[in-house]
Length: 494
Ligand code: FRU
Image (cartoon, rainbow, N blue to C red):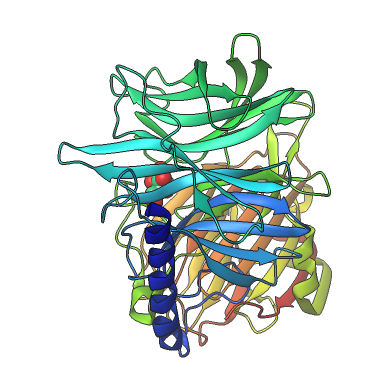
């Protein structure tokens, strides 16, 4: 009975996608190489996994509208995280615990067990007395068609915890047990709750893995926990921390007690459009994270979700990034090497000095490109230098490396007719001779990686193809460029 409604709702959603598909044919702001849904609204990456020889990306999806609404899980597969094939929707709201127009199948994760693919997700509903979030299970033999477990929900909020803030299970296996961490709230403070199970169906609460005493906000969305080297990492997207919204902690895990002791705190991305990253381990042993490239209405800089709703879509993912642990227990987030396949029109310039006059950077068609720069700080006398990206005569996005203040800013106040705001972070200049910069520009976004991929900014901009000039300019002195390599980036998404 209920299984039938799930299937019916998937088929209904597929028909909506078919109807909407032609509407994006003339869309001008669609990304060229960043992952997007076929149409409609998408947010968080869900259930990321390498399964049956392919990368599976699921995503929070509303196929019926260009804004957030009853959540489905969209689904796509790829051999290289670049070329994607969309599959039928994996999960649609259909049961009492997940069938609500302001609820649905919220974020979660996946795991392979005995050849089957299991999804763990949060069912969000409202029986008339506030939202209720519970953890639920679905499974598939073929990795395409999913059945919801008939004894869902498998986990409900513990006593004393807010039922409306209990979501986003992330699963992994350790020894004989499956473990799951999930975001929760008690007394208005964020907690990450740890559970374990032998069979994926019956779960036992172990401990509060880690928590906020106020310094980390009131709710952690999309917690993620993994081992890297001999350390463990807890990532989460905190609510209530102003400009911080993708935090990572590095420390040690004690599986006997279920406690995580951390000693390092870092930020994954300081940009305005990077949220809810999820990690997975691929067949090459890489720990990869993927984030949603947009922002929520509760974030301080939020204005709206951008103008792409006029083109019948909204939302994309940031470029997948490989996580690496350094000796000082901080993390690097490096765009996966697969994207080098998309390069064309290589341009290499070495050992030049730029003063007050803008130096024009040749980079593909000036819209979709990759840029790698090394600045020789020893020979640089300028107080600051700027990258002026996606410029026309009157518009520009300004990335400023202020060497005097030791600050990086990503200014989109004059990027286009929509964007506003300046995201900022501290540059790590101490004892550094070479400043490394790596940029990915796509139709509607710019990602900046610097300081050894530890200081990153993702920002959406909505500039037309006439905004295709890119420059570097120095303020009060000379900037010594050791290397300036650029490539155009081919189009693979439509
Ligand atoms: C994070 C989030 C999750 C939730 C989902 C709903 O962006 O708010 O906590 O599960 O989005 O779409």
